[in-house]
Amino acid sequence: MVFDKNDYDIRTFHAGNESLECVCYNNLVYADNPVNPAFQSMNLFAPKAYLSGGEINGYTRATAPIFLPNTVGGYMPGPLAEPGLNVYGPPVPNSVFRALEHGYVTACPAIRGRSQPQGKAPACIADYKAAVRCLRHIAGDLPGDTERIITNGTSAGGALSALMGATGNDAGYDAYLDPIGAAHERDDVFAASCYCPIINLENADAAYEWQFQGVNEYHRMKMKPREGGRPSFTPEDGKMTGEQIAVSNDLAKLFPAYVNSQNLMKDGRQLTLDGNGEGSFKEYVKSIVLDSARAAIDCGEGLSGMNWLAMDGAARAIDMDFSAYARAITRMKTAPAFDGLSLESPENHLFGVDAIPAQEIHGRHFTLYSYLHSKVNGAMCDPSIVELLNPMPHIGKAGVTLAKHWRIRHGEADRDTSLAISSMLVLKLLEQGCSVDYGAPWGVPHAGDYDLDALFAWIDRVCGQESAVRKIA
Ligand code: DHB
Image (tube, rainbow, N blue to C red; front, side, top):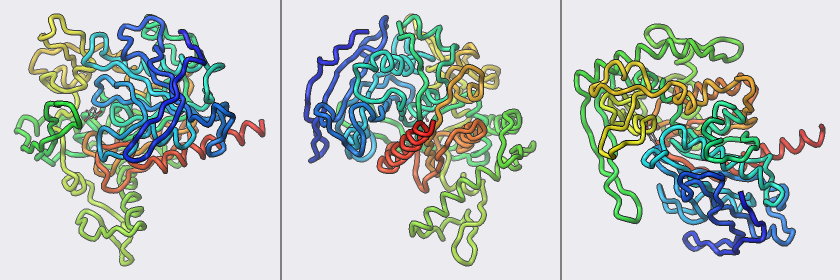
């Protein structure tokens, strides 16, 4: 890994009518034997003020946290990013632009994805880890504090951020890091910011049907072929077939056994579900939605039209009808939501094999249910690979360094994966003593980076807490 600290440019970036000057190291290849150098490299940016000993928000060249956002979506390749406007959502300054303005050193890795040769699982997480190891390898020459690396991502990118937080230094990834020539350094991170993480894929079908069983109509957006510029979507509505409804019923029945096997604790009590999917775990998930409603009411939103919410006389949300809530936010995916019976989902491809020739089916199953019910006689992915993409089994494992700090946002109106998925992650992290800032912002669908001021306030807070602890020690 060659890094010349003097080989940088100073560039001015624009986002709308705002501009920002920063120091840029472009296209640093973060592994010694890359299979796809364009997607195994990163851009590194630092505020220009740090060149001349300046401070921003109390941070200096040496103390600035390193913000490490990824651009992965749909488990597709994540391209290199730079300060500018958001590609998805409203065209406002992106997180890279805002992070630099705020004083963070910002490293933007490209990451291989499922559509590329050698981009199937676990390439995406191997690459993210290799980028962190590279940062540590060149730490002496680098602006920023490699003990304060904060990952960030949305959806599949949120899953990668969660994996970074949950699997630090886990030797199980070495078989994928050594061949690409990742540096022999630690790959744990200080904090993980995860927006609507699409994690726990092998249990996400059951969780989805636990939440949406009985909601048989679906509403989704189909991405139009992209002709440059911004992506656009067309709505697609339909009703699940009788067969899909039967699959939904089967899968919903599988969820309680999984929840109960996880030994999820809250206030010294195990949260569980009975055979009908009722129980203390469901009450916990409901409490997350109720907290979201209360926060919205506190912000002056009128929620009296929400017929699934029960209010008391002072318009406080006191209870909810979980099935009616699922009907209100609507189903997006047909059953099974993730492990498609015809190997048609993004996740089937993620766990697939490189196709030779390219037109052959290259997806694989990753749940026993879909494998046994496959319509295409699909093969099963090796469960050890599936596990490398799931943070849950790594949390609390010996020899693994967990991020101390977590911020997880899963929109209250998200239909891409069940709220149960992020809730279970949070419970596991709390049990391990992590600090977790969790919330399901009201009315927010599957989205990310929508509250950067709050995200950065959280980063500043956890970095401040940590420096206080260090001083005492
Ligand atoms: C993403 C969304 C999904 O619904 C999914 O199954 C996988 C990935 C995403 O937006 O990254």
